[in-house]
Length: 478
Image 1 (cartoon, helix red, strand yellow):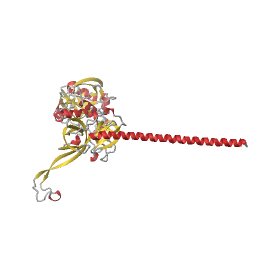
Image 2: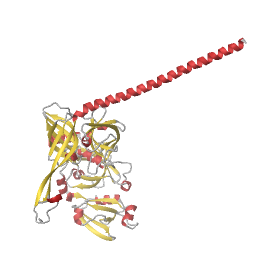
Image 3: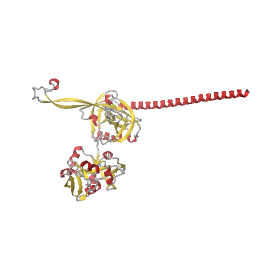
Image 4: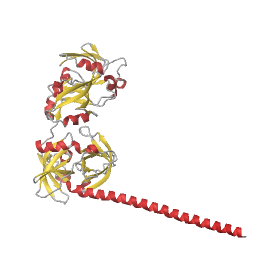
């Protein structure tokens, strides 16, 4: 009996002990969960305070830009006869000019101060052909502004306004230190909603943009819309790391694909705008592109990145230095070249008069060349020099795909060309899609044959070409 009683007591004690342990365990788990939730709330609160502090610092340096362009349209007198139709009895109505105004909207960043004059960086497409420009400050004050300089190649513009007030200027960061995944904020006036801040991350770096823009771009999913152009992309230190420029969209509004010019691509432009009124680009005197995979293979360029030279301007830094068509430039001053746009930016940022060292691949060999950079000429001056470029056309490998597309027999070897209008090659009679099979009686079987022949320093070149299944000979003086 006592033994049974003792067993019951022991069982009861075990039950009580388990209950106590379970209770303690539950309390322990609950306590851990509470602490995790609390830590998460603290982390979110810290991020919130960070965003709040950034907005407080950056909003005053981002302005809304308002533009007015006066356009003139020729309209017959009597155009207002009912419903804007011409009076049918007045068929001899004289043409008169009528003016009308179009308004534009964008954003800008206050980047420099000189006394009472403040400079605002924005996109060139924001300014356009504006006849009147004004800026709206963070406190809603509106001030008239003037153009300091514009640049189509990077889609940048600098405007200025005067104020006796003490206004903030932006802190410019280092866009080279950005990594994919970094937090960024976009600040501007999307769709006219001034002083708007959106948050996101760096989605990618080094993106290519519109064909006529030589800059690379930071991609972000921070919401960017019309009106954000020219505004700031900032990091968690409140530093401007990009100038918001364009979006990719299928709807006309943000779908999380926004693109900003890296701030390191604009720092020299700001200085040049203020000092010279325009961006002072370095110039080498070549036309370049990225080579296709077959050209890579035939010229031994596989495994390298760089800029492929198609043409050389006569009496240019490249011409005097001995750069040749078909050269593949892989580095400038020891810095690797990623692609032809990267090379264009690298050369453009070098001062006129500076001596550079380039590594390039020629005839499958790596060689080194020095060149003295000049100031890039204006576009109309370069157009006037079109007749000086050599050879004046672009050669491409005659691959199987091209043969099928143009109905060319498989046994034919050579290179196919596109000719630049106004060049000596154009004036000599070479035409687009001519197939060069011989140069000075030397067979051309591939791109290496072509460039070795075109660079042999002859004074006169005889091209044998196939055109519309007929053989034609063209003579071209160098």
